[in-house]
Amino acid sequence: MHCMQFSGYTQKDRILLYMGTSKKFEEIVNKDASRTQPRYHNKQWNKTQRIYDKLNKKNMRYNADKFQGMMFVEATPHGELTCRFRKILKDIKLNIKVIEKLGRSIRSVICKTYPFRNTMCVEENCVVWPEEATIFTFSHNLPRNSGQLKKQEIAKLHDFLLSAILQNFITEVFVFINTISLIFQYFDKRFTVYIFLKISIFV
Image (cartoon, rainbow, N blue to C red):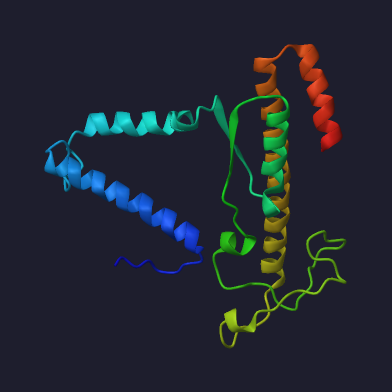
């Protein structure tokens, strides 16, 4: 009996993951038995062909489901942005695969002990930390004998958060522009203007 560690997956996902990995392992064993590809090999074994296969698989991975192309969308809560793009592409009958990028929290980007304390921002009219807002404090994540953050550190963190928000907004704008340019490649300008107005109303 093969067991799999419970790591947040549902039972259905664990079964699918196990079946996929076991099938891949059987292919490796069969190739080794038929001497097509050794089970253990160094990096120099058939290096040129493996590089070609890797690049070809990366560039043509959407062809397995007979898609015309693929596009990556920034992660949003509940996949709202991804659902919007899929609905728009379905309405204009473009067979393009939409893939949602993995999102990252601001805390994971900072990569250090949780810096937020009961200290308000030093900037006036701050968008990220307004004066009336309550700053969350996680005492179990803070080191012992840790003092208040200095004003310079708070200012740096303030600038970082503002840049992260601005970068997310710019990314969404670029994704929207890329979608419009993609539509230009398949349809004439008159139909594209109609779709552009439709998307603007939808958004």
